[in-house]
Length: 359
Ligand code: NAD
View 1: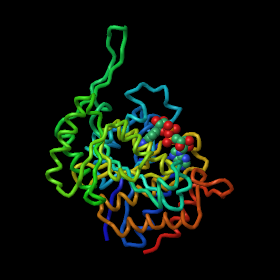
View 2 (view 1 turned 135 degrees about the vertical axis):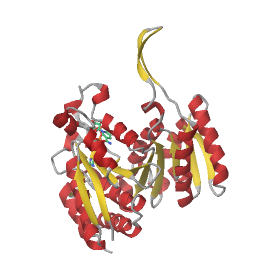
View 3 (view 1 turned 180 degrees about the vertical axis):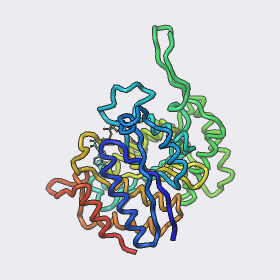
């Protein structure tokens, strides 16, 4: 029995709707397994800009640092599209990762058997199921590098810089090798070492780390080849480790293979057990406030939190099994419904999952 303090950033768009369902799932876990979850709600993104003028207020950073883990919905939306670049709602995400030292992002892309028809990939390629883990570096690379405007040969130019230190590569590499050990002991490291100096260092460090994990076979793939293999033969890429920008793109490619972006959870982790848990999708302004969003990605993110931060395997499995059972029973939200299938709303899907939770 544990007492867990969680900072909750519901965010913008569909954020409040999906996070509310996820919080109710945790409350049910608390009742079933005898834990208490205390929620401290705080602001980030567009909602924070409206309330405080800043996308990531100091109080939010303090609340997150004081919590055992952070739950995040999504931030951003058209309302804030004209806010200057360094104050856009999405900058709050980079700020949170940076301030909280969350350098690795784990994004499982799983196809549930019941949803295999939703995948745009042929059934014979997918087989019964697909379970890929993307380990993305989160606080380095081009998203954090030197940037700006300058006068160049052809007039004003904008630039962004990709750089990686040995330390940054080593720590994400360790996370990835550990993940590979827990899976099929095969790791695919994705880079662009034929062109980029930072990728050559990436490849060197990932290769060096292999000595500490003799059971893991490591394969290096250029990013264009990996993007192709992911749709041609996704079963061969069980665990992928890659840089911040490549990982960003890969995660969305993988999400499309699974059929819906509304299904995929993520964990952002640092050195210790602390983590931030969020769906991989954005704030979906087109369906916000309409009870149409799929809450499953956020609910599965809670399972990741219970497993990775709190070590509560039975509780994590309870949530994952409930989601599988709900899908097997034929319940769908609009984004995963086939033609002719009735779609549940966000609240109703949350309720169904809670009904199916058994010890
Ligand atoms: P998005 O992921 O919000 O939406 C893409 C499409 O997927 C939309 O059609 C949307 O309706 C659908 N979708 C997304 N999540 C869904 C869910 N749970 N259930 C059903 N359908 C879902 O991407 P976008 O439209 O490019 O971005 C919208 C805003 O979100 C932008 O401001 C963007 O910057 C922001 N964003 C935030 C995050 C984050 O907070 N982590 C991530 C990506 C994008």
